[in-house]
Length: 138
Image (cartoon, rainbow, N blue to C red; front, side):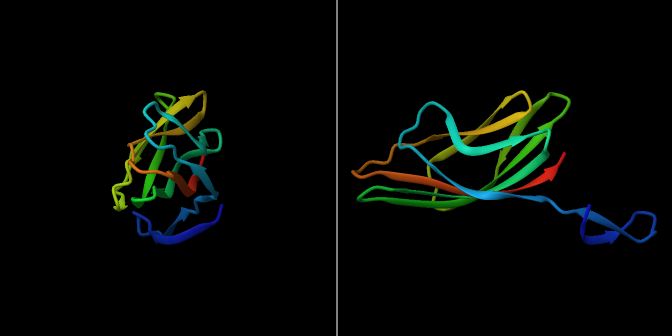
């Protein structure tokens, strides 16, 4: 395994390398308006047989004829081997509060990120999320 940003080991024995996270390709998915029941973010899955965790960076863009919300942020996805579930932590978003909330479900070893969204008034709604991730090997 490759290494990046070596640091001093606790015993003074020299550098201890950090493993390089594995890139997960960029993707794009639709975000529905006023999505009350949690629904899958298409393509935003993680499998504990491949990764023990991942950080997902995203940008949500939601627009109507009279309103626009654009926000960026990150999601931390962590496999909990004792409980056999994926957990999610949502980092800060901005510049706009985009009105999308994220959760994660676990089926076997696979975590699926889901979302709900607020209602944006106005005609001609479009919404999308663009994201990429770095995963930590299992």
